[in-house]
Length: 120
Image (cartoon, rainbow, N blue to C red; front, top):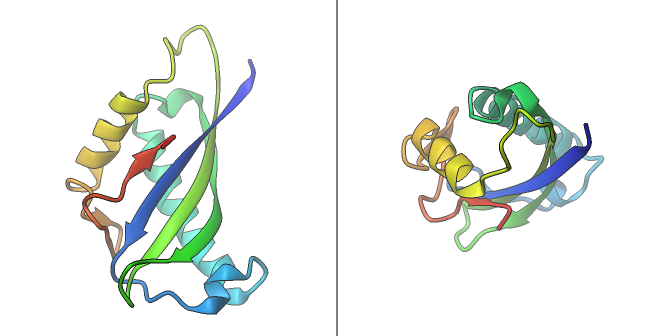
């Protein structure tokens, strides 16, 4: 089965953006990326692509509109197989929306309700 990639983008409203979040080998980037991976992997394993899901990796953090906002970019992967009808980004968006309390909570982070994009 081929490995397929998709992107996730969302904004955290209670993680103040700092320049060290832009530096992939900084301690802050690595620790925040590890937390994001744990939260995202946990959610996606419970989603409709769960059995095919192989993991997420944070690819970047960017400054948001407000001082306390941090935009998160992640690339996730899954094994494309016959038992997975097709990758349905609307369905996955709905599942993630429900699992994050209408795109408001990811673990101890608060999310901007209008910021979630799946393969957007």
